[in-house]
Image (cartoon, rainbow, N blue to C red; front, side, top):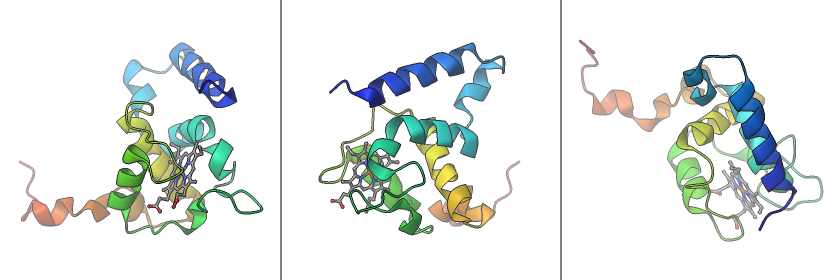
Length: 129
Ligand code: HEC
């Protein structure tokens, strides 16, 4: 299964490793990090701009912004013709790809930040200290 995507991922990893940013910044789930991970892992099936002309894989511009749980499940576990990404893409990369989708699709910031997971509701009164 070593195709061009594998090489792309290796190149991206090498580029990230030599970046002059602090170590933790490599794992920061920013839309820009998501774009890189998406280009390495996802673009060959989903297209550089979230869709391939002429059909093919799911049009990611149409993914529902309010269903991050479905995104995480489908991406981690795979769905029919799509392989599972768990153990290949790091969790921070998958999070970054979610934010990248949000930035391309123009989702509201609170959706992109993952507030839709219900973390606020689960925490009840959200007094952090
Ligand atoms: C080998 C080709 C391939 C690659 C690579 C790939 N996908 Fe997919 N993906 C598919 C196909 C095919 C489907 C449609 C699955 C179906 O509904 O039968 C899909 C569907 C999806 C869906 C919709 C799932 C749902 O719940 O309907 C999401 C989200 C998605 N892919 C994200 C990603 C992300 C993120 C990556 C990169 C980490 C990725 N895909 C890489 C082929 C691929």
